[in-house]
Image (cartoon, rainbow, N blue to C red):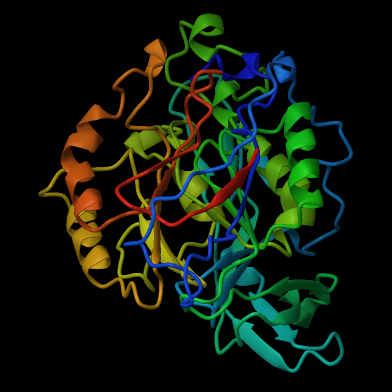
Amino acid sequence: MTFWRLFAFALSIIIIIININVAVTDSKGIPSTLDGPFDAVTVPYDVSLRGNAVDLPDTDPRVRRRVNGFQPEQISVSLSVNYDSVWISWVTGEFQIGDNIKPLDPDSVASVVRYGRTRFPLTHEATGYSLVYNQLYPFEGLQNYTSGIIHHVRLTGLKPSTLYYYRCGDPSISAMSDIYHFRTMPVSSPWSYPKRIAVVGDLGLTYNTTDTITHLTRNKPDLVLLVGDVTYANLYLTNGTGSDCYDCSFPHAPIHETYQPRWDYWGRFMQSVISKTPIMVVEGNHEIEEQAGNQRFAAYSSRFAFPSKESNSSSTFYYSFNAGGIHFIMLGAYVAYSKSAEQYKWLERDLANVDRSMTPWLVAAWHPPWYSSYQAHYKEAECMRMEMEELLYSYGVDIVFNGHVSHENQLQLCWCLGRGHGYTIKV
């Protein structure tokens, strides 16, 4: 999807803010998935938004490092499987890029979060784990990369629909962040839902991205879903030279290079949003990022916290979680999905365990759409569809969110399976 920059919303994929304003049809209030179907309401895409997308340069103050030493940066919140737990993630120390890099020691800095329901004092403390990842290329002239220390800490025992304050870092070396806050999800029930969920895809880090995030922030979502293609670091060479079309500009590259600092720039730019609004991410094709030893998805799998273990998944590529009366299933289109694969078997188990009396909405998301009329991606995900579609139908999945297709004729970010709830979509 190297032509993505031709479109002004940077696909972004349009920012869709979903109001779960479910139609009330009888004395019971919110209907079940057996009621309906109801008409969706949407706003047409404004074609005047099309244009060239320009990346934010590394000199932009919004992507520059603003902390010293091992103070936390790139702070984010993500959900665990239920309302009573979240993950806090951040980065300490500076990345290195060049010929002679020396990875930082993850054990040299502690992973601590202090939190509570009041700003002062923060009465609870949790610890987690840390890691670094490398992006290495076995070719002369290509620059290698090693990340700062990435920390993930899981907070547990939280109350539903409750505002919590927190600081993260290492108190033993006076390297704690400012105080941030987040609100937990509502309890799982057919009567409680997040008020607004922002769904974005193919986000990147362009000037169009800044417009998208400004629009998202103004709408004050309770949760952000990012359905793949995060930073587009793989449209760059390791020396920082970028292109709208990688294969066109660099046809003789010995391997598809990336410029990993774009991930750090993205984390810094997004911190103001995702340090207080939980973000849930699933991989796209631009996260593949092949390197030495045929390793892939190193940045994606390292930088985000996923509720994989909590949802009985063995992978960062597919997992599930609840947000009020919604059960979300995030699927991986770039790992094995055949009926004999572990992902398919996990999906069967996950769907079988969904309690529709508690989470009547069942929503699935992955990156490439199964249905698209756009020639460049026509039937690109057909094999995945043939393996998984019937299973999703059989369990009455209500809505599917995808990204990937950057074309004005394919702006319908969601599609519905079977008989679903009434819902309102604002574009």
